[in-house]
Amino acid sequence: MSIPQQTLFVSVLSGRVPHAVLITGERGAGKRNTAERLAGMLLCTGHPKPCGACRGCRLRETGSHPDLLRVSEQKGTIKIEAVRDLIEELSKKLYGEGHRAVLIENAQAMTVQAQNCLLKTLEDPPDGTVFVLTCRSERELLPTVVSRCRVVRITGEGEAAARVRLEKELGTDAREAALFARLGEGYFERAREWALEKGPMELRHGLWSVLMRLSEPGADPLAGYALCKDRAEEAGLILSVLSGILAEVLLYKQGGGAISPDHARDTAALSKKFSGPGLQRCLECAARAGALIEVNAHRQMLIEDLLLKIKDAMEDSLYDQSDRRAL
Ligand SMILES: [Zn+2]
Image (cartoon, rainbow, N blue to C red; front, side):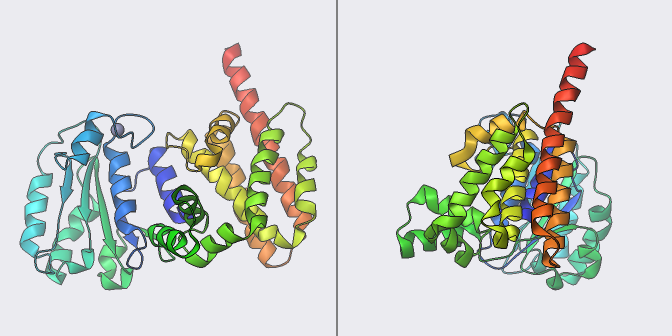
């Protein structure tokens, strides 16, 4: 899963649901999966979302959830009549208590009249309604439609395509291929590096254990830097792996499932060590450090600074919890 997808899911799980999302990306990038997963999170009443077991999930999986509306192309176009029918449908009451998702795949198939007809509803949909549009590029839609959506760009050829190629070309086992494809953010070449070179994978396992050790009382944050010391030239990779891990922990904390099957236990354990805002602060710090590394700032200092922030965030959450118990 790429960072834009992760960010979208994290904000949805934490209750900041955009009223319209436009997912763009090349063929096979994973637009449909992302849209379906988003709809699943919106309609699920269980935990973690989507749980696959609650009534909402079961209805959705059998294609009969009344709060999931799909507008599909007919012979390559979506005409104004289809949009009018949709608006009529949206005036009815919600079936459940949560959200209603409107999926418009290949949104570029909407005629100009259809897009114009949708504008008002897209800007101010009925309560609980979330529009999910997909198309290859936002250039294919009217700027007035795009500006009313939160745009999520999926780059690379897509996780699914990268996974299949790893299995075919390198004979990677299916479970590992899925992991490498995710770590490579849907780019085959990056996924291939994860699969072939031991280094990055060792670094990733190492950074998981750095975080686990850091969560022990009295741990010295700067001791974690020892692992990174010999790899200072890979500071960019270290930061991106660290922020990937923090994003996974945040996603889990907000009620999503664990993403890395090989570190599922660590994900659960770490999620208890942070507060949500604490994790957000660490992610922001990692993003700032990532930008500074590009301009050649002092690498060791940036990584040490992030480790200190992470330790602070863990201790803050401990303090919050004991505070609450005291009350
Ligand atoms: Zn569910």
